[in-house]
Amino acid sequence: MFKKPLIILLLFFFVLGQRASVALAQGSEEIEAFKKNDRVLILAPHPDDETIACAGIIQKALKGRAEVRVAYLTNGDHNEFAFIVYEKRITFRRTEFIHMGMVRRQEAIDAMRLLGLGQDKLTFLGYPDNGTFAIFSQYWQTGKPFRSFLTRISRVPYKTDLSFGSPYIGESILSDLKKVLLNYKPTKIFVSHPADVNLDHKALYLFLQIALRELRDRIPRAKVYAYLVHSLDWPKPRDYHPELNLKPPESFRNTQIEWSKLDLVPRALWLKYKAVLAYKSQTMVSAFYLLSFARKNELFGDYPEIQLKKQVSSKKRPPDFFGFSEMFTGARGGKEAPRANNPAGNHGEVSYAVVDKYFVIRVAKDKELIRRFSLALDIFGFNRRRPFASMPKIRIKARYEKFIVYDGARQVNPKNIRLHFNADDLILRIPLETLGNPDFILTSVRAYGGKPVLSDTGFRRIVIK
Image 1: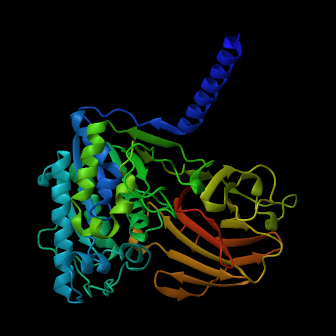
Image 2 (image 1 turned 180 degrees about the vertical axis):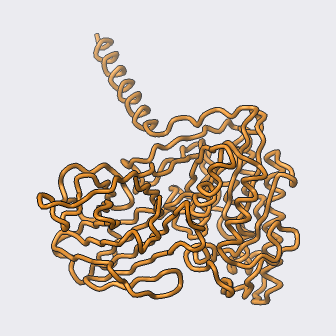
Image 3 (image 1 turned 90 degrees about the horizontal axis):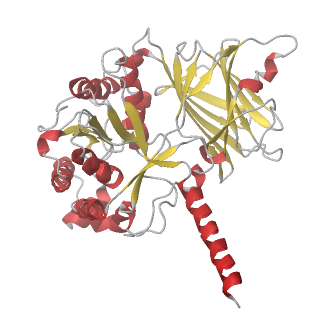
């Protein structure tokens, strides 16, 4: 007598489960298959990033008979705490940091061997761990290269690395990365995410964007996949959980990012686990964190490119309005969505426009946020008619109605840059000429309302039409 209600109940839970599965899968389509003619390049900021983010990709590509190469931006020589735990001694001698970089280099070789990749497929550039973002934003066209705080070194010290002896300046890194791309001509590139909180991870993404633009007519256009490693309180739970899926962080959900994934078969997951453990110098300190990435899948996704048309203000649409109708908006945490005809918005949202030869950025805020409201902004423009080394590298720090402007390491006169601090928003208007009349812009906005972060967009690619 209870069979019919029981069947209905079972069907209900089955449908509910199916819907949950579909919801979980939305935005995480399986990454496209690797083919024999694919040339896969994994770009790693530090030795271990290629393993925790792309061990499954490496194995899958090799199984599909694709060519695979890995290039490391740094040797990871700046982790003093890991050095102390691993070597069981404290030292600040330059040679000891170089030794640590060589240890991590060998660990990378061992980890890749486990995944089926020989040493001849690996390229080490040897640039300063925890210094490459400073180089990208400040050290171009200078005879005084960046000097690492811990190592006190200003040139690549590793004789076995491609870049041995190269000064720590932007031209060196860009030149070496272009050399890797030209020699290999990859069809698929995996690189660290533009919203990763680690600055070396951001820097590698930025250097790649510039290198690809400069080589646009010399190499085939590659498909670029961004992988995330460092994000606040992610992934959870920590430690080794091979039964769990790797999901996007909460702050990245409901965004314009189209996530793709690679599901790992049991053997591939086991080999990834073993490869992570090959980094003994790191797992002695943070195995619980690194092994959090040994899960049922690997995850990839980048922000879509924003395209802005130049607009001209008129009597019907005064300059202060800045053409918000065609802007794109980013909610707090870097969430992005197209903006309709409504200049108001949720607090923390970020909008962009190009109006009357100005690049305009608007950050929405709460009416009560006045003197506690602050902003940090990076703007790096690319102009195909100028060497990137000579382009302005603009950084702006604003608090309430006051702001300062840097071009590279120098504080500069903020001529013609205007800041409007209103009840609902802050609007910055920057002449395109000040940015080097760019074809496209790489920009990041971080807004604060006292202690909490209201918005952190990561680096967005904005093309000006």
